[in-house]
Length: 388
Picture 1 (cartoon, helix red, strand yellow):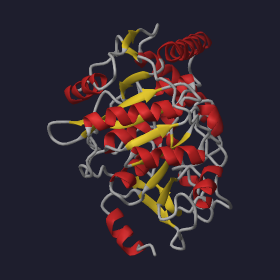
Picture 2 (cartoon, helix red, strand yellow; picture 1 turned 180 degrees about the horizontal axis):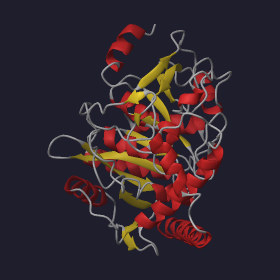
Picture 3 (cartoon, helix red, strand yellow; picture 1 turned 30 degrees about the vertical axis):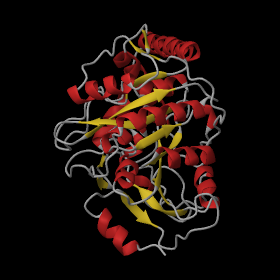
Picture 4 (spheres, helix red, strand yellow; picture 1 turned 135 degrees about the vertical axis):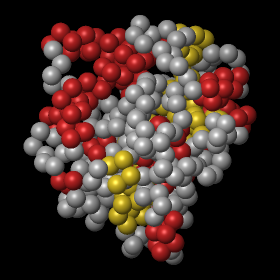
């Protein structure tokens, strides 16, 4: 039996869960005995399906999204919905309509976003698994900031059924968990993954990150690279990650401006973000599209030639809710979305004052088992996971 009183008490200082299904119960199957939280932009039958929007507070999901239904059929108890950025645009999880979610490692600090409730709930042990969504890094950024594991499936290999979209060309529903075994089991249930484990290859990394790494991130990334069978090959994108991320943001802004055009009660912050894409000139839009197309092709070529790409998850650790959101924190995560490739984030180290930092692996669609095997190898060397 699930003790919802204890869960609510543990959730209160974090504000990770928003709505609860107090009738949740375990079933039979490979996930029997495990609990799940669901990001509020994914349909969970009987609970508000808000997408983080004020106007959708009274919208009740009449069915489960495909990925939720699969977890329920596998025996998991689906506890409730998790806080997120308004409309899933942002990486802080300080929602003007539903409140601020706190990082379990440091109250008052961001858990990342837009799936911040998912990262915080898993890190704090409020649920065994959480579902998030990842458009430019919104599963992997909370995984890094909260010190847990996160997986973004290849875009075409996971159902988008029951998802309030940000940009369907980039969106992917993905799980977060406190260990790689559970993360992989969940990924196999909700998405199409290759299960054969071929040789991963030597791997590659970017010769130029294009942004200064926090010292703890730099240390952790060096340690992760040292844990590989051989040093990764340095490759170079034609466009720096910051330029690629900006082009991706413009695409998302344009798509969401159309999708949310008739939605009332948007916050001033979100309304401003939705103006960037539509006001871009035709020439600038063409340049953005060229950046994305070239980057997509290069990333797929790099992975095909070298097996995988290893990168920091974010250039920075978590940050105070009272400070600005670092503009570059999606510079590395956005690349897998733009290429449509699977990516796995894992804990890799700690700042001197106790905040987690992470690394990520980007692989080829159909080679997910090799990605998980490589992550286990790095994880067993770094041993960087710590509960809050």
